[in-house]
Image (cartoon, rainbow, N blue to C red; front, side):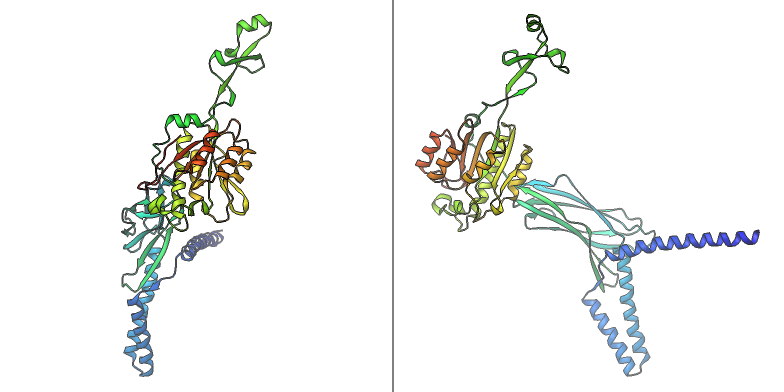
Length: 443
């Protein structure tokens, strides 16, 4: 019996050791797979070349000292590879930020935390931590720092601040570390935090022309909805149904009619609003130097960027006065892009971050009939660079009925266009570029 228990204990220890070695082996292979192979520096290439030359010369000249010196230099390179892997492979990093959506002109802030090595033993090393920023951001603070890592060393922290310059979707990252061996022969540039997408939404332009009276006149509140609550003046009666709250029972009318009746209040709710952005290149190419001064670019790209800002400004102003704001524009292949169907202003601003100027886009008058089929009612705001008399007449026809409209332009429209819009009940808003000679007001 004693002889049989000894082999079983030995087998258990052997199995435990094999399991431990297998676990550490798999972990080591995972670390090696995601760690780039070290690249020699200029000094490293020099040492490798000298080492190979000494070995070759020693073998030809049968000089053992030269061969030994060459082998020693190559051993230094191998040791540098091992030490670089030991430092770089176990490192972890994380990114924390307050938000993934920023506005043009705002500062994007994040914190990069680089954890020290998880190995109980190992060298301490100072390495370069760098955050990659695309052209949409201008760095306010240094996006790189030198950090000390190693066993027992506190986690390194890098605070990054960058000013959002251009709208759109951009990537922040990846965060990379640069590790060099103690001899300065090899270098590893390894990403420790993956890149993340940040959406830069357009800023707002001064909308002094949009006063309370202009918006109140443009937004139609004629369409009401059945709601709960309200005063007795706007209430209607209907028979009681199981589940109706007792406090809604109108006892006097119930006694007069011989059965229970409850109040059903009809309230006028804020309407929905559609912001239609014209993405046709020709609408912005026609704006000349006399109209926009510094924005007279041949392609109309800068003028379109200002139109996007105007659309964002109108969206922010209307979101406080309507129950739902939807952004529409012509998409690729003749499709219509709907953004903000849930009624959120954030969705509309994100949609404005994605819109692009196109030469093959359809006019707004071709897009609006498709929107009306989605049960969007209330108010229509069209943002464009230039509107012709024919387009103005089509807009008035397309938004007849209870819907009202606002025409927001960068330059004052032609008097004929303004007259057509005025007769159709539209308000005209001119939001000029700051510093431009154009002027206008809400009517």
